[in-house]
Length: 248
Image (cartoon, rainbow, N blue to C red):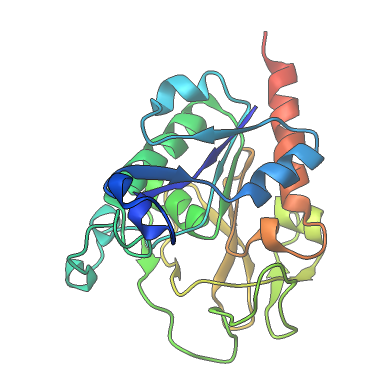
């Protein structure tokens, strides 16, 4: 069983929703994650914020921290002035501190119990923050387009080529280089305790991180939205199966 995180917002954000229930909240999940995990042989499980992180990790074989809003700067020492005073339940694109708190706890519980972790886009940044790292609040424009205008699914453009460190999990999965999609304006800055950078684009932006000697991988792109098969999802299922086989 591989846990997948999601987001929470009010029902009145859905076009055509019955206004009588507009102030009620909905938990939502990108189904592409579940589809690809199932195709790789795993059993996808959606995780609510209300799930106790430590207890659920005792039942799971792996955890995927998915993409979404910016991590609130309060969790990584960023400038609080950039936070807009909007309820995240009514605008799902701003910060959601409840989600941040839950996913950070989930990462820490998974690492403590030694189950595999895959962080995707925001999820890679959550992984870094959970280990005490910091983020780039807003990437400047440059030679590589990180906030692409392309529509998912896509394998990205030739300028978004990620180079991987020899001997890393990423290099084993993707080879020396890989062209990927990209939809982010923040990035890993200072790595958290033990975390190492294993992939970058030509402008130096961090695109992959790992925890040496542990089944932990963060990717800044969206493997669930790559048009071609992305081995990161298969890696997660295989790492989870290996962890399960090692249990007494």
